[in-house]
Image (cartoon, rainbow, N blue to C red; front, side, top):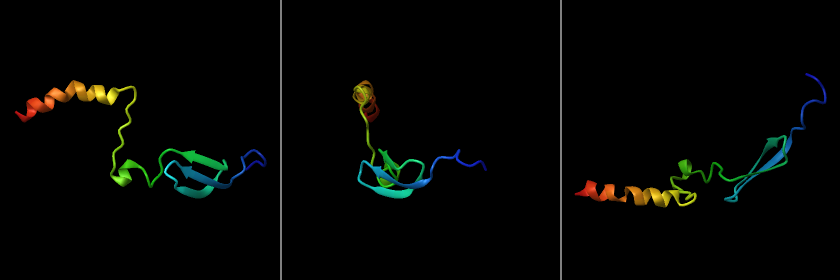
Length: 72
């Protein structure tokens, strides 16, 4: 292995938006993430719907009549 071509591999801190902090090793010192293993919807069972430019609401309006017809 060649010398001085690899980045430094040091202790790192991964911080999630939910407040969870994970200590590990990486080539970067501090890493900030949006979703970690504690707050991921698959693990917690909670679903988050991100409404980007009203797409969720327009989808619900478009298919709202289908549920009413299905129940009849």
